[in-house]
Image (cartoon, rainbow, N blue to C red):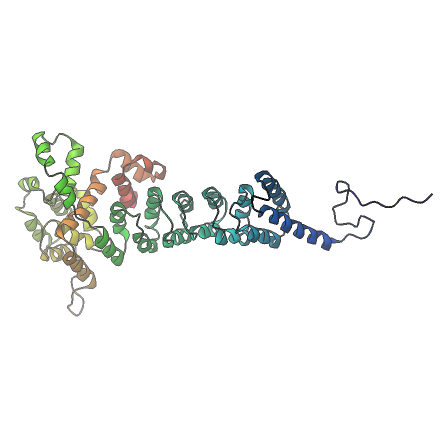
Length: 419
């Protein structure tokens, strides 16, 4: 009786270790080739149009690919990612696995796929490394939710890429995080000033640690007039006066809007007959008492005045003088009183003082008042006891509990309170 013919081994009993099923020596090459070919074919199936493969078949095929990719070589994973990059609807689990993979794999999708959803990008941003996040920041049309995930790590290259991306969109929360980060990374300020989402409140706070050119840009773009507000509420001043200014919120808002900057009531209590006289006295030497007096006469709280007087750049002095109607010579008087050099060895005006005088000349009174009022509103009246405690404790988690001017005060004065 003849021997039965050898049958082909069944797949469920075949030895998949690479050994020849007929007993020959193991051969790794055919196994690698078969895996690479299998991955390619499965990827082809995932890429088939909906008319040829339904959603369940696509999901099942994606699950098989995921299992193979877990132990696949880098080159094989890159090939699969490139194959799927042009797919309009990449299976979510497969997309997330590839996006979390090594950079050569994820790059194929992040640079070439325009169909990745926000959920997949956010997962990648939170799970991968900084270079993955930078590539996400470079993508067209980065939305607010994705941007929030990107800026959470406060990585300068990522934030810079996001700010340079004109098609990205930033939420208010993301803006506040970036504004706070500019204190340690001022090179981001010019990029941030270009963003359409930036608001005057952000710009006025960044002013304190911005360089001279950025300060010029801030005043040029954000020092807005309050004329529209003044026209809209002109009749409310008399109403509030009849009520005896008993509502503190209304009084604070109207103080921000009104045209008059100098504090007439302070003159009655002052040893000086006017703000001009106090400034003239200051040129002989600025004292703490005299600085406080100038602040009161200018309609400012002493904390705001101290911030202006101690600013190393000097531009806030120009804003103070312009807003209060002081003459150009008042800048020199304050400059001299603060013991700052007015002239160089050749007798020429120092560049710093010249820059401040130019700032004074280029700024309109009403616009200077807007900046000064906001500083006073944000840096002093907003400082509640809980805010001061948060500043001292560096309690970033409590920021959301405070209003916009309170958060601005935390940014501007946090380090001052820490000294």
